[in-house]
Image (cartoon, one colour):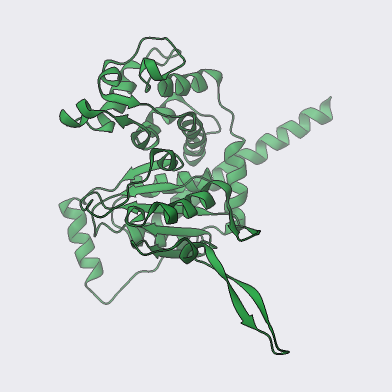
Length: 348
């Protein structure tokens, strides 16, 4: 019995040491990213959370806000292989996944040789994903879900970690191919990148118009990241916190589209056609685990779920005509959910 207890204590001590290691790595990562990126700390934190959870991210922001630079810088601090694909209307699935080509042999004759596409990387930036047709979008999104690529009769596995950051420009929607709801649901977070403050913008101008260009150093290696991804999944969650996340997701659905008859939030009943899927609840808890670890805690709190509600839920709510007519945003609905769905333990 004592041997078992000692083993458990040593295991818990080791986990706490790993949590502290990750917290310190986050601090160093922030410092390295800040050498290149001014502000946008919340965006960088959410990107790191998704990466620790093996999720993917959809970035919304107007051109020129540094989305590409942010993604590249994060990959450098984590020592991950980075590739960027500019999505265009003429982009084909094989341009992303790769294709078989005929190779001439020295001895004569030919053979098929697979030439891998840019998807065979650790960190893929899919720039303006809504500018390419659904067939090409589906090729990428299949790889995101299955973490493998099928070419002809052969299936190729993608080396972990595999992380996709897709960007969308909210201004120019003409000639675009909006992602179907079922495909949008595969993204763990929908992150909105806003404009910098005046002080931040002045710092950006000073830092990018001179001769001294900073370069970030690697804080973690891919092997360390894979280990930390496993630690995140082992973080315990109280049943009350799981139930809070489940009730929050359930309340996002109109009564007619839910298997639960509990009372609904008025704004949901009025403006929402379809609410969040069960993937939302999974994302809330997984991301909550990662957030807790990054803050040096080995347990998930209600506040972790609340802090992540907007990036997890905003892209999973389908608003109806009344919502668009009344200029209601999905974030407004999430605000109403957080206000009306109470935490049963703390009474908030």
